[in-house]
Amino acid sequence: MTEEERNARERIVAAALALFADHGADAVSLRDIASRADVSQPLISHHFGSREGLRAAVDDHVTATFDHLLQMSMAELADGGATTASGFVEALVAGLPPGSPIPAYLRRMLLSGEPAGRALFRRWYAVSVDILQRLDAAGLARPTSDPPMRAAFLLANDLAMILLHDHLSDVLGADPLSPEGLQRWAADAMDAYTDGVFRKDPT
Image 1 (cartoon, rainbow, N blue to C red):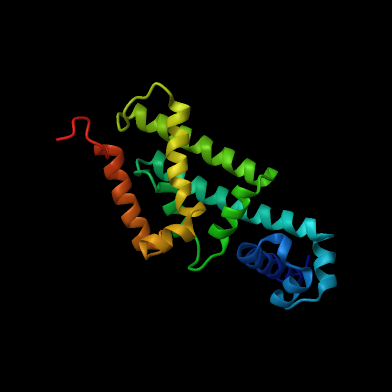
Image 2: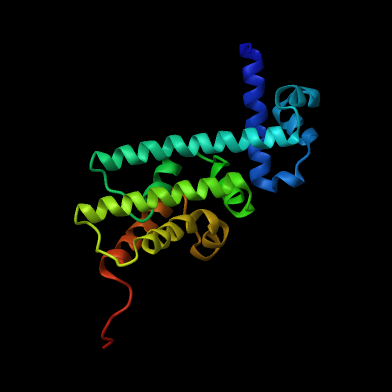
């Protein structure tokens, strides 16, 4: 593949990713993608074979980005870095360029019920289990009689910033995935996880 062909392919994937994230894959035509990528529509078929092939390429691109940031996050944890409630979401957002459509696309992947989204969720859950085990072994987490459920609970809170992004932005008056929003979320989540929210003996 020539450099020109590689650049065109990357532009097509980037255009499809942005449009799919904004409108959903079913609402976007190949003509829309070709216009945004500044390529001919037949060139999309040449590189990806079909609309389904292009969508699979976008899924692969997002998954590869996710996996790369995941590896970086786990390496930080192995080196003694703190990973808390919003740890991986924070690492994900920090590793992406400003205004990246990937968080919005991740939301659509996770809610679609399709194999790519299910596989992504399973990996994220496996990481949550691993992190909880490491924190427990280091004495940084309270023991639980149901580790799988505890990991699922922490994951659900982690994912809330992505899955409920628009609703959270509306009620908070701020983007929860912005640096300021992540800082607020992490601070309150850590307070809730370490000191609790409810009193056992109300006064």
